[in-house]
Length: 25
Image 1 (cartoon, rainbow, N blue to C red):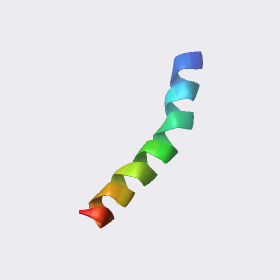
Image 2 (image 1 turned 45 degrees about the horizontal axis):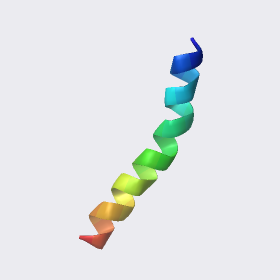
Image 3 (image 1 turned 135 degrees about the vertical axis):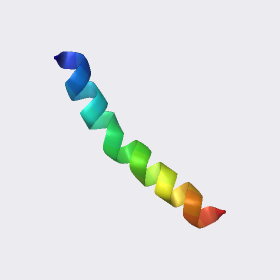
């Protein structure tokens, strides 16, 4: 269960980074 929470916590920043990278390209 802790891993799931960790994934959820790391998901938003990763998504933001992905969107930011798409904007940069």
